Amino acid sequence: MSTHILCLDDEPNYVLILEALLSEEGYSVTALSDPETALAYLDESEVDVVITDMKMPKLTGQQVLDHIKKNFPYIPVMIMTAYGSIEGAVEAMKLGAFDYITKPFANEELLLSVRKASQMAETQRQYRVLQESLSLRYGKHQIIGNSKVMQTVLAMIDRAGPSKATVLITGESGTGKELVAKAIHFSSTRDSGPFISVNCAALNPGVLESELFGHEKGSFTGAVARKRGRFELAHGGTLFLDEIGELSQDMQVKLLRVLQERSFERVGGTELISVDIRLVAATNKDLPEAVKNGTFREDLYYRLNVIQIEMPALRERREDIPLLAAHFAQKYAKENEIEAKVFSPEAVGYLMGYEWPGNVRQLENVVERCMVLAGSDTIGVDDLPPEIKDEEAQFKSAVDLLPVKLDLSDTLEKIEAALVRRALVRSDFVQVKAAELLGVSKSLLQYKLKKYKISAHP
Image (cartoon, rainbow, N blue to C red; front, side, top):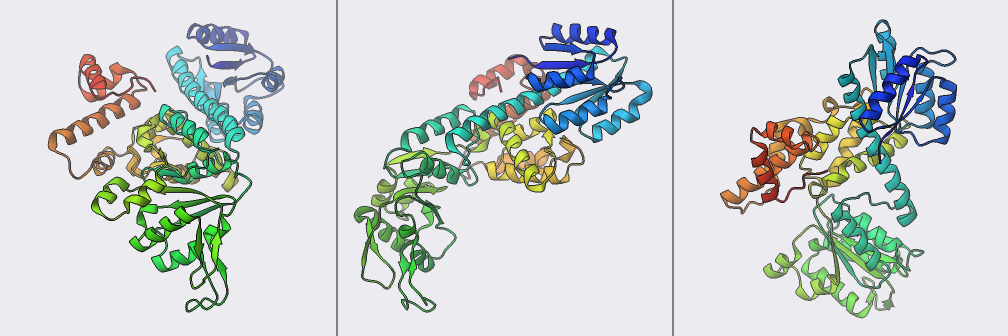
């Protein structure tokens, strides 16, 4: 789908030049000379980018910009201005314009700016479409992702959700395992029941037992009243046990018994309590290895691992990063009651090239920081934290993610693959430019892409 550009200028010659130049580049162009007609057109049509002159009769370019920022904040607006009015264009940039072009303009300069605005518009469009579809699918518990690996996860949720089977969600910290658990709950027949979450790593074994099973009055010091546990509270719904790999051996035995018998006793009690729950568990640990080492019960592992859903690390789904960044930008704009800011194409390139040891949680923190500290409506490379834009810090991030037990050749190959992938992202997937960044020939780059199974397309 080609980018639709609305060009607005009261000078007929410039309208004709813009229409011819942009159409030749493959863009869909609507050229108008009356600003009031242009605003009415915006209300009725899908427009991706607007190019408007600054000085026009009836309405100024600044007034057009204000209208678009208020009603269509996702549309990048480029301001054209005569050389003597650059101060006004700079002021427009401060108020939300994407870029400004001086008249008479150089074709290459205009096309470069349009290309960047088009990339930003495409990211915003993908985000809006995905947000709408996920709102219908999972309500407020949205899982943002259009990559192949995330489509696999969503398909697993679709199949597992309506069943009664226990689900084990695995993956690194910060990948969004609780979001998957909620999506499973809300796509099941238990969606009207409670969703109860417990972080098994946050509580010591004694407190955790009371939290899960409840306790009777006087069962221990401080137990001044009967308390219902999370198993009882989750009756008719879903119980989510996060960080299940942190359970003590004693708690593993007690959990196994509940899963087998679907009943338990409160701490200090004798009454047998039966519950109807769906259990979903999550871990960032290698449970098969823990079973092998004797730190996790094999029988409990097989009880939990009826259906397993593996959440990919963010570096394994880099094409989702622009969508996630746009989503978090909207979220924190609303929280802080400010206008949503957008990342420049160069900044998005840096985000996509980073290794993200903290995964989606780290990306969210970075976006929140940028939303608060960036001085304009466009977040550029200079606004990114040092660990994202600094090459040395990026290299350290990539190395820290490598397993300790790796022989030298495997380690060097993993580092080389990360460098090739990052160069490809930084060059907007133009292989000639990526090869130049790496100081290699295009044919050698293509060999490396094939060797490491790296996609040559975003």
